[in-house]
Length: 258
Image (tube, rainbow, N blue to C red; front, side, top):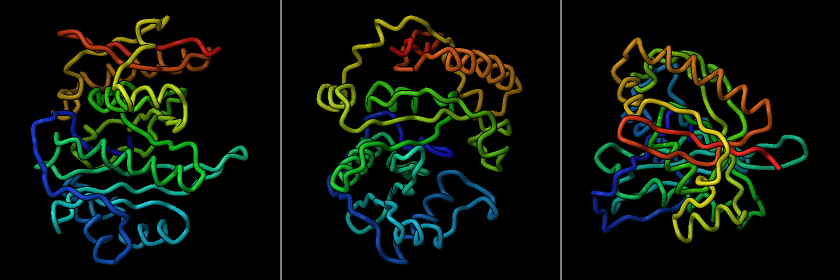
């Protein structure tokens, strides 16, 4: 969902005192920096400083925090963007502390992003995420209803984060069309209807995310293979609409654009 989105996919943690609200103070922005460091373990050079959060907040961007009582445990950072005469939000970070991942906080943060955007007349939120991060793919495509039409090789360069596996940071651009029927159906029923009708599929080993985190040299070969496949399909007018899982494989589902 971002440079290294970490929001969790399991549902095994309860946070009864959870609240979500915009971050507006210097102290809250400093907490966003702390959470960012704890989640991704970037070098000092690659860590986004609090100044950037302040600028985003002052220029129409969006910083939403998740709190367990008074303790900040997650956040989203989005920038106001404009391209081809459309205004949208680019969501750069969505992070939840490791001890709180799996509680549904990531979904709550995304829903808060959507609600705030719609109140401001914004109909599209985009973000990047790693094609090898399969649980993020499930969350973004199957649960939120985002779609993918673009694949950018080595978007951020090779970073210092161990979560990025010391390989090129290839990224999807997720498009979340906030008022589309697809998104509404996902958010209301959390179902994935179109995937069964998908015309094509790109297969990835089910354990590829674990291989990425472990720094396995095999990951580079897998990445290069699917990079070529996705670029080819997207150039031919396909859209990725979902992901399915078997015991040993995950399959990205693609449909021909109408």
